[in-house]
Image (cartoon, rainbow, N blue to C red; front, side, top):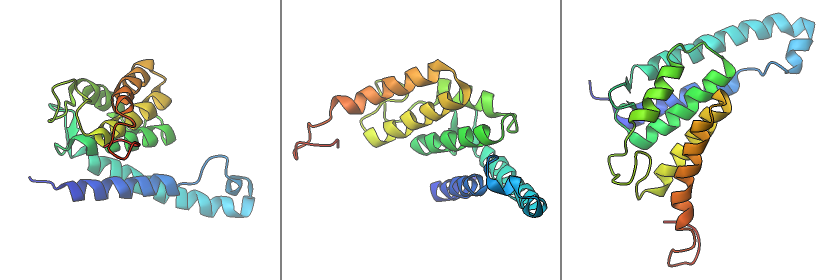
Length: 169
C-alpha cells in the first residue's frame, strides 16, 4: 500500500490536535463539581480519538527502517508527537519504548554520508533535534539529549555563513 506524505502528516496533525485539546489534569474543570461529569465524558471521548490516532499512525511504522511511511524528517515529527502522547498518557502506547529505540538505532537519512541524523538539509536535522529533546523530556534518558546536542552542532556550525550574513541555508 502506497501512503503519501500528506496523509501521514494529516494523521499526525489530527492526533496532535486531539492531544492538545485534552484537558490538563490541573485544570479548574476538575475542581468544579457540576462540570466534572460532563468534562469526564468529553475527556473519555478525546482519549478514544487520541488512541485511535496513535493506532492509525503506528500502521505506517516500518521497524526495519525505524521510519514512518519511509519519510525521514516527517518521522521526526511523528516521534515528537508520540513522545507528547506518552507524556500525557504514560504507558498507554505499549510500542512507545521499542519504537523510540528502533528509530534511534535505524533511522538513517537517505541523504547522509555523515551519520544517521546528519545531512545537508539543516531543517531536517533540527526536526530530529526537537524530537530527541522531547523523547529525553519524557524518558529522562540522557542518550537522547546527547544525540539532540550532537545533531544541533551541525546546523549551528554554519550559522552566519550565508550570503546575507545571517541565518542558515
